[in-house]
Amino acid sequence: GENVEQHPSTLSVQEGDSAVIKCTYSDSASNYFPWYKQELGKGPQLIIDIRSNVGEKKDQRIAVTLNKTAKHFSLHITETQPEDSAVYFCAAIPTGGGNKLTFGTGTQLKVEL
Amino acid sequence: GAVVSQHPSRVICKSGTSVKIECRSLDFQATTMFWYRQFPKQSLMLMATSNEGSKATYEQGVEKDKFLINHASLTLSTLTVTSAHPEDSSFYICSAEDRFGNIQYFGAGTRLSVL
Image 1 (cartoon, each protein chain N blue to C red):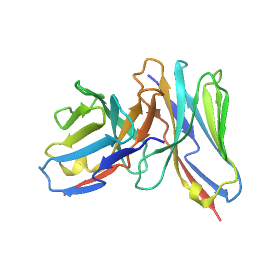
Image 2 (cartoon, each protein chain N blue to C red):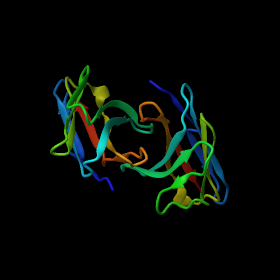
Image 3 (cartoon, helix red, strand yellow):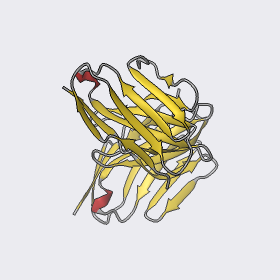
Image 4 (cartoon, rainbow over the protein chains, first blue to last red):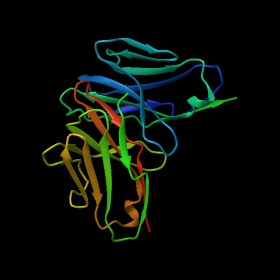
């Protein structure tokens, strides 16, 4: 089955700096890679996603890149703000996996003033 | 974006009682919904896949008689924790799949505390 690894587990940046979170996956058949933001005591919120036929996708301050050959994908947040502080999860859905999400272990991002 | 409503947000119950959690897709139809469990500072663990009009599919190690799932309509799935015990205390989260884009939208979660 699919295995998703996520690094780092914690990340602290100064406000205005960029933050990068990286994930690797094991199943080369995976074709959909969403990123979720989870604030304390709340459910995950989809912030951006990418499919395997695209190498990069951007939405304002958030971007995701995908390297299918290396089987890794990354989340990039630019001009970080305190409200970006949360836990971020990457995930993958393998082809034929019944659309089950396999989540990474999460990254606690703290944006300091 | 699509909205998934989960209710209640928090429930405290006595050991031995049953608790029902509802998950509704408010502005789209979801033939498939998922139920997750999350322990503090950990990732989401898939418990079961709920399909409208059919029996749920449970992940290995999840007791189907303990966690009853019903998906009677395209907008509602329920999870009932039967005969709850303190070890069932956790954060339960549902998601609903957009059947056109295969995107999962999550509810706000239910914090279950069993005394």
